[in-house]
Image 1 (cartoon, rainbow, N blue to C red):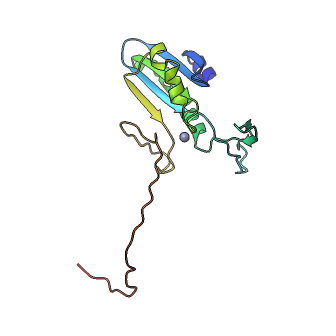
Image 2: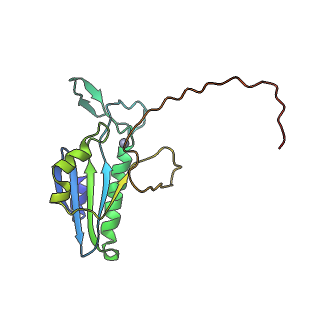
Image 3: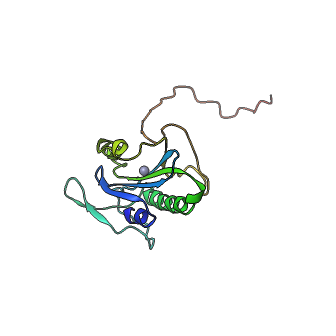
Length: 177
Ligand SMILES: [Zn+2]
């Protein structure tokens, strides 16, 4: 990720907030826009049999060797992030301002964003006027992009609902309204 940004002329800082990458592209006076993608994997062995299936392994916190893959789609994030950086660098004459691109670690087990902020993300680098965070969604058809203001997919809650009632009759005739 760092090498990709460096090639495009960004000032790059690595190992920020753990394994985070921060790239800054200054392009004259204008707003500062931050684009963030998370890039970590999950301790899941990929068994798809696809030629591009992950063969990577890592040691988990209990000392076991486990397979790791981007089961959450973070490989898509990185691809989109690099593509966005390339496009914005190529279109530099058509916009003004500062572009900050961050590759965030540890989204899956949380703490990566916090670690980058604790390391001084907003003090050591230009503070964004606008921040865009991306995440894949299996709920959208291919080729569609969903946008929402505020935070999204930043929490997981569980809710159990018990519905009490009586079973409906099986031979009811539909009523026309
Ligand atoms: Zn994710």
